[in-house]
Length: 391
Image 1 (cartoon, one colour):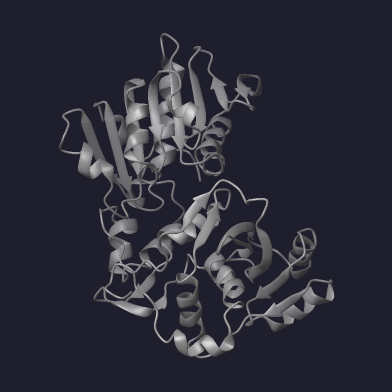
Image 2 (spheres, one colour; image 1 turned 45 degrees about the vertical axis):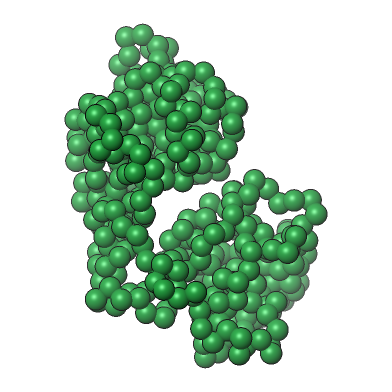
């Protein structure tokens, strides 16, 4: 995506108050626009400043804000490798100003030194207490961004309760750098009214019909956890191949993202699996030829159980498990937060998972439902619709 002067950037540069809350839909360039502004300020400073860019975890930062920062700096020919401290994730500009990156799962960083500017990426994923700690250590301005999937502390404790708050909503229409293919993909989902309100229009909503909830995000896999399965969902050119490792630990399951990548051949998939600790692989039964080929490379692999009602039965089984995700499993976390039931043209939820956020979710379902005894089929005739009255 080209880093150009978009409508989004123009809107954000007009904000003048201390706290700047930026809600918006998908592809609205919220994060990129804020980082562009912070880079420009650091380059123009008359005296050195410190800007902190943060989010919930370091893997999230590396795949998001840090990558965006480095791409902008390099594309605009600002980047000087000698000024980038790779171990501290800090860039020092010629003005003496610094932009640092740290994750909010590091308490000593949250309570660290004061700064002039702060940006909390996806602020809806951090608690109010963390924001409070960061705010009192920030002298000048605070940027927050998020997808408005549900109400959180910004709406209840900050907006309309303080006079030092700006609030802006961005959508993909504010981002002239958004590729046509992405715009078309977004607009094809207009019929899903709940999704469209949040991700298309950037408006606050409670995304009804979320399939899974109350999963924990953990730092790492405990030493005592036992690897049980891998789940494999095939992709190729348009969709990623997702491989999920499933560990059993203390009465629940831990899910760890092994790979999430487009364009993988069956040989490449087999190579990835053969380089992992050994466990049975459960793969999408719709690809029998791929399963046979991967098996020929020495992978212990079986087809998933498929038949009438098997998807919903599998979902119901997963819903009944205690699930944790490793924080490095960024794509799984994103899918978990966005995996929903479809809605009809009237916005009514129907009994079918929506597509688009289902690659890793399908893979983990293949693996987990392989633990479900056959005789339990009749125990899962229905499934849960969180936020829609069924439990």
